Image (cartoon, rainbow, N blue to C red; front, side):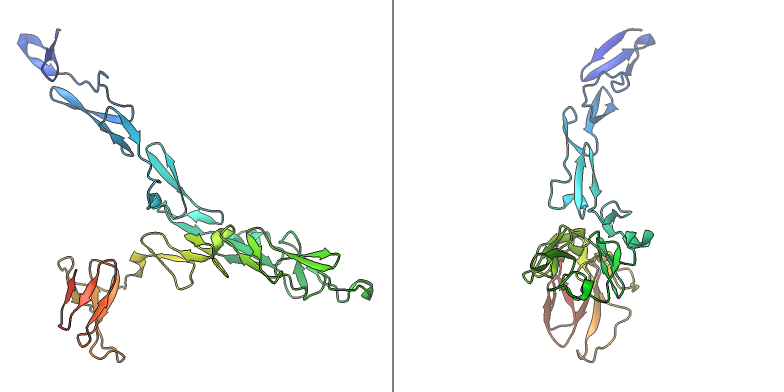
Length: 308
């Protein structure tokens, strides 16, 4: 069998002068990048960079999905890997099934969180507490019973054994009385007794984004999430949609919801549902109004809404 060449590619010569295309991808005679896919074509072949890479196929480079404002869609940390990326969560959280969101871990659900008496779960963390008549030891897990009277009954000054020693977290004996300390991730306030939570502990109690603030951290949410009324939890916008049914309409069209009713506080008010977003927009045909949403919805003094 003889091998001949044709313009733009290679052919194999068969009997009676017939030629067949050479599959350069199978015979590994292509010059595609190791991070590209070789696709055979008539008389030639094409090199296409794999998913997660960019380039002309002969030269492909990794795309850093984490190097964007979107952070790869990860609500906590994004780690770039060749051709892909993965999301990780801060301590006290676990990765959700979608691979991007982070959910609180209930440490108290297993072994009472290691607490001797009472375990209280919080967003991104937990804390141990003691029953009446006990105080938390320095290890923050076991409880020590308070004595009914001070040792020998003659000790001067306040003691950490006193019920009302005033320290929010850790009480230390000091030459001039007591000194208060805070657990890791907390900061002692100006009264030298209370402890302020910081973003370094349990992400400040925030499910997504924590920013230091005074007197407490401020929580916010990643894209496509909204902050719950508790000020810490984040809820997907799709979960905010009311359970209503609608007839098929053209995208962008606004129709009254099936559960429309008059609100005594707004005479003649009717509820409308904006189909292009998961928001329930209230519009009164009596009063003109302007609502600012991801897309601006404007209501004129007439009875229709325009999406601008």
